[in-house]
Length: 378
Image (cartoon, rainbow, N blue to C red):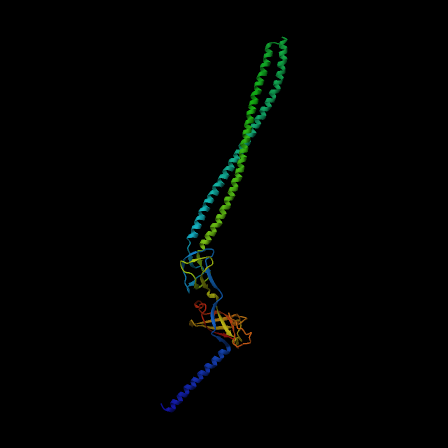
């Protein structure tokens, strides 16, 4: 190839490179005019869930997940030593069973006592009524005999006087005397029987009072039964609480996500509320962008964003601007700038922007990853 042709070919290559460079520069300028680009981006989360055992403490028997492992909602991720809580449940179950048996036995005893008292009262009242009726009948007979005896006593006196005067035979006088003696004996027998009935009536009243006294015992036993019912209810509540505590020995994930941090290992002694694992919900991940103030024009809520994450260069992510914070990142720095002395250097401030992912394998992301974002201007 001649020198002239070589020069011509070199010139063509240079021209081609210039054209490519111009095209690339035009595309770059066009892209920068229509997109706000920055690499000050970080993957963040709205929700970092710390898992801990509620109400229970003890030795960790097992931690089933490590940092970075995926978890599913409801999955058991850690176990606490259950033996102390299981023993408590078994003890309360035994006490509850014994209390229920005692309550049942006492209820049966009260029912039997109530039936016995009712029968005794009915029997005593019937006895009182029966004896009272018999005694009233006897008293009427005694009253009739007393009237008869009074008449016989008058006849006896009259016949005695007549017999003394020889006006009547002795047989008449003796008949009246015999009838008087017989009526007197009948009266005495009836009076003795009336006294016996009175004693029987008193005995029946005593039986009635005894039955009524047993009613007080029924009241006392019913109060004891109410106390047992309260004891059963208290034991049932304590057992429910103990079973709840036993269930808390299993630590379950409240969401689908990944383990961001493990704070304890098997054998550690932990208390209630002490973090065991920290979980990240992939649905709560977002991109925190610190955009320079001179690139903020045209960036609005709803603007589309093209995202590249350094850890996954072959994956394409997209998102939309969800929030533009009303203060710069420097405003909330741990050591804010002090310009009170008049010293001031112009520094481009960065405004925090929150971008929610709308496309891409978000489940691969981890909190803290960096990358680059291009936000489409409106």
